[in-house]
Length: 303
Image (tube, rainbow, N blue to C red; front, side, top):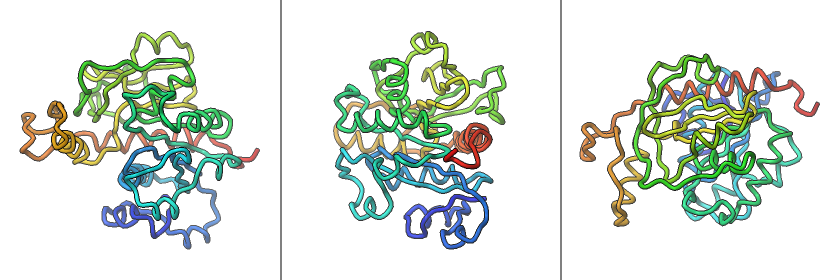
């Protein structure tokens, strides 16, 4: 069963063209089933691109899902049309009296700032605290993973000498974690960040498990013992050209940035990028929704 989204959401047209099946709202209203309630807190500047990337993955599962989009009230978004935000997004105040099966908190390009300097930090903390009692499982992506580990467990982020930028090889651990079910022994993940969390800090917290990491890019996936909180430091949801767009943007700005590693053939930016992470991305989100949301949540969220 598919996700249930508005026909007018820009992502609907893209998903339709890609044969990602979604349920139109009028048809969903006639079905006598309870869809999963997934809340997405979108912190990325280009809300439309990010929501499409996430809905592509959430929508490629056999679970009917109702999507609610929110963005910070305490931040003015300059890269997404105001009408789009008014039509399709809510604020946390609009949903904080509800319960949700799952929550996704996206990354944000604010990692060089201290957490407390981010204008919506207090609002984000409120959401993360609320999620512990009102959400079955929360997936934190990239900067949100660092923010969640810092807020919930006091784990600090550390600045890197240079941007972690490219597509990096990861090895599947021997332990059969449900979140990694179906993964190949070696899989690839895009990373794009100036900071990191360290294994040495995470290993001191008894309630946390590192379940995926890379020799090159470091810690990738951390979870609490029962999977109520998932922290993903990479960007498995990225489109084929997202890293290219970031690289071209930074070069145009005159920034000193290296070519994203293991992304272009022979690391040559004049060539077409090679996509090596798509199947991993779909498995990651499908496993999260199945094992940590669908199989854990209550039929009646209010009880």
